[in-house]
Each structure stands twice: as C-alpha cells, then as structure tokens.
Length: 162
Image: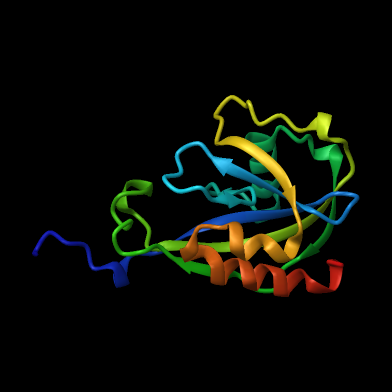
C-alpha cells in the first residue's frame, strides 16, 4: 500500500563484525537473547557516527562478550565490505525500520585469554549462551538469511584458518 517503505531506497546499516579465534582454531559464537530461532552468531554491531570500524569492533567485543581489548590481537581485516539484506518480512520490524540490511567490515582476532575472561552477562546483554565452534560449521549454525554473508567471511579469512 501507499505506506509501505520501498526497501530499495533504504540504506544499509554500517556495522563491524568480529571472528574471534581461540588457541584451538575455533570461533566464538553467541546465541542471541531475542532470537526467535535457535541460531548462533559472531559478535557484531553498529558503527556509531564518527567512529571507525575497528574502534566499533573492539567496543562491540566488550559489550557483547566482556572480553577486554588486551585479550585479543588483530590478525586480519577483510578487504571488502560485506553486505546482507534482511528478509522482507523483517524490514520495518528491526532497527526502527531505517535499514534494509547491513554493510559490514569484518575483523579477525586471535583470543589471547582463557574462557574465564569471557562474560556475556554485560550491561546490555545480547547473548544468552556462547560456545566455540569449528570455522567450517559457521554457515550451518547462523540464521539462514546470513548464510551467504558467513560464507564470504570464511572465504576472506581462509588463509588464516586451519
């Protein structure tokens, strides 16, 4: 109808994403508190105005996982921005209807701490559970509409994954 937003005119929300590798070569994933389906995801979040992507990534890391900045070491940055589109039924329901999807800068970090350094019970808790998974299983555990995105993230960081 006349009040429907034309999805094609909506911008993509700028975001930063983090692939965190532990000593065993496994990747951190969390289960969102608000998720309607059993899906896991890597930490990620919006880039604030005037904030660079790497600063946003480290801020999100603390906000979502409780991991302190000195417990990670940057390995690589994905060369290109990666995009995903929201399914049409979600556009307008999330992010106040302002975005059609996300454009993301992805960062690969090595986790230098121990599991005791992870605390998802943060001030604005986003995850109800977390675990380490083998990188190749990521596309299988993510919500379906982000599967192509996760395959691109894996491809970007493939040289650093065993």
